[in-house]
Image 1 (tube, rainbow, N blue to C red):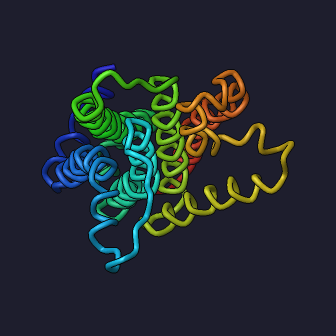
Image 2 (spheres, rainbow, N blue to C red):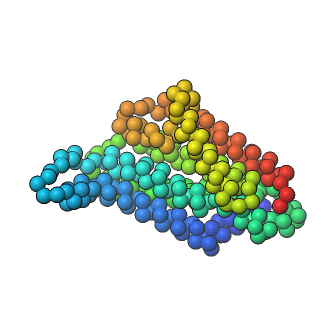
Image 3 (tube, rainbow, N blue to C red):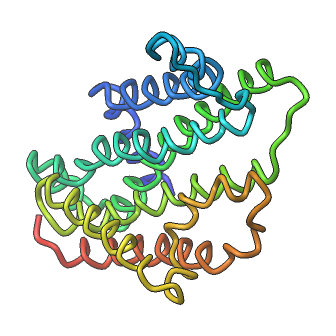
Length: 254
């Protein structure tokens, strides 16, 4: 247990020294402010850009619009940045050869994988929920008394989807000795999820639904029970990815 804690602490310190945590955290803070502000003032901004004599009738912004911005920005920007930042979690160790001495001195190989996953998940957790908290505070400020359905459930689903991508990235980073390999592996996985959407039966189990059905959950058009299968698949992928990474790294020459 002690080697796991020490190596995880080392990973967190390294993320801080390389400013990767600062970049990720800052971007998610910015998104947290942008979500409600965009929803609140976008109609006025659009009206100001319209030619004279042309009027557009837009519905008044609501708290649902703010959360729509949250899910849009996190999936399109936040997850993308997180994957880029975590893509070198194993490749930098291969390139520097820093693991050779540690492993020869008795550091269990599985500890390396578990610590890498823990550190990246902790940074994702802190960044994601900080963004959520900022969005939530300003949404309540701008739209007092307005509520949305299944907010906790929908945000938890997207959070778990992010952890799944980190676990898949961990496999790619373990397989390949450069960050590009891990990125391409993760992109290939995401591409497969989009291809699975073409089949309605298979799509019922597609974990991608955890990231693209949020607004339907918030508006009451979809009950969380309908996403039990994608949630199960998501958790299964996380567990299998960690186990696979351990098995691959155990047999890999470093």
